[in-house]
Amino acid sequence: KLEGLKTIAVTTNGINLTRLLPRLKEAGLNAINISLDTLVPAKFEFIVRRKGTNLSSKTTVSILAGMLCLLYLQVNCVVMRGFNEDEVLDFVDFTRDLPLDVRFIEYMPFDGKYCCFGILLGQK
Image (cartoon, rainbow, N blue to C red; front, side, top):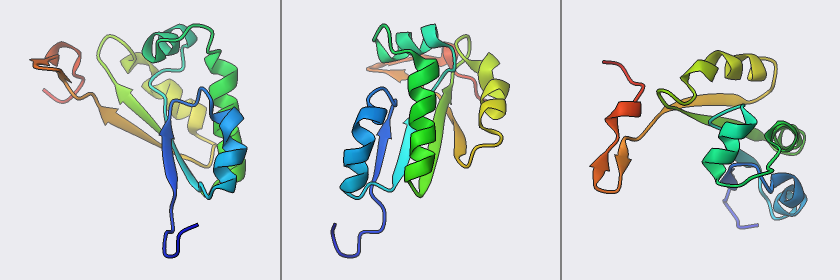
């Protein structure tokens, strides 16, 4: 641990978090940002480009493990038109009674040199 360093944080999609959390905690980790853009397993697999991630158990266990071991836990959800905007209230219900913060983040409409304004869910 470095003197004067108050927070050591990591941002993750949670896939390997349950396996790595004990060692990360030993190393001084005390905050986690979990990137979770959907609660639907098939959509989650599409986002992380991995089959068989079993979102419902692994990510939920990761969130609960984080709450038990860390001082601060946050879930970041990027809201995208036509993909997950119908899940916003599901996220609110999912996290309502959990001791964590949820941040709904506006999609950054850039893909290399090209803009992707069609899926932007901001104010018109």
